[in-house]
Length: 386
Ligand SMILES: Cc1ncc(COP(=O)(O)O)c(C=O)c1O
Image 1 (cartoon, rainbow, N blue to C red):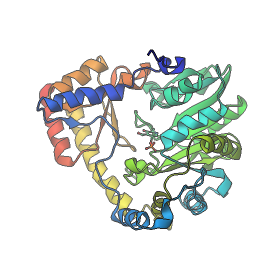
Image 2: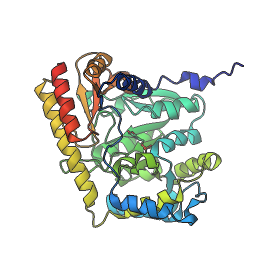
Image 3: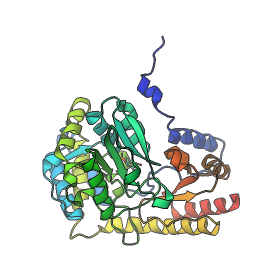
Image 4: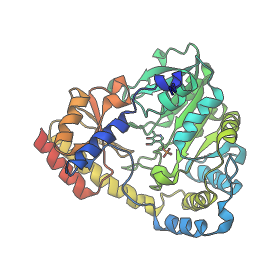
């Protein structure tokens, strides 16, 4: 039997993270005590009140039927209340859709709007799902938007070729560069999208993982955003729930409707018990304050960040201390694969910038999703390697 992959599958580049995982597994198999600073999966647990809620709701027999493709009404209401509380943004329930993780929503939105040959503007470097899961798997054409250090890893809208472009992805706080933006930048992005009739998919997965009093804005805070934008949020990073697969998209109703049309045909909403626990999680935001759990979580991450940044600076790397995310983006001043290989040799796994696109070359992403003592040990090993 010879079963051929579809052309679109053949067009996918190798998923670099999977290759790294294989390499790392191989090291571990050989007995190396590998410290993984490569994958963006927090080591910290969800807060106890969410674990309790998950246990309780999963134990309720009523919570094991299919959920609506667009999500449970109570969950969508909780999302609208959270958007109001957190960003001061007013939304209706029909401008909200639940997701089985924001990755799924990002990929499926393109399915609703991208025809073969349509151009999709994708930041480079970027989370690979925009180019692969969205553009390529929908037979769209990826147009890279370079994110350059001299522009603080923000796009220069004046230089983007918009011909045939139907959709654009933006992501701040940014993975992998950890760059952040303010509302003025978001206003420029909305103006650009409106002028060229481009759907703006804004990935705000890291909006809650912030430090030094920085608070990330929502693109929906900008006047007119609701005409062109769909914003993705996730409980994965905010509440350390990556494996629970619960997220949501909010924004323009036509964009939500398109995504709902796709999802109705291919899946149902996230498990009802997960949505119920997520409802409680969102309701923990009160009085415009950062919830206690999140304050503590980000304080822990901030201490690790400071350790890592200090070590890298001592070694002569110019590293910006990130105001958000759990990534440090290092200009490694050399071939990023070689840099990663050198660190792998001393038992530290990081991600070479090339894995995020060609403009990521010369950089490396180091995550601080390991306990402090492991970060200290990793720092010692990095220092020894250089
Ligand atoms: C920028 C960005 N967006 C979205 C996601 C996906 O998150 P999830 O599918 O867990 O909601 C990730 C995960 O690493 C990410 O880095």
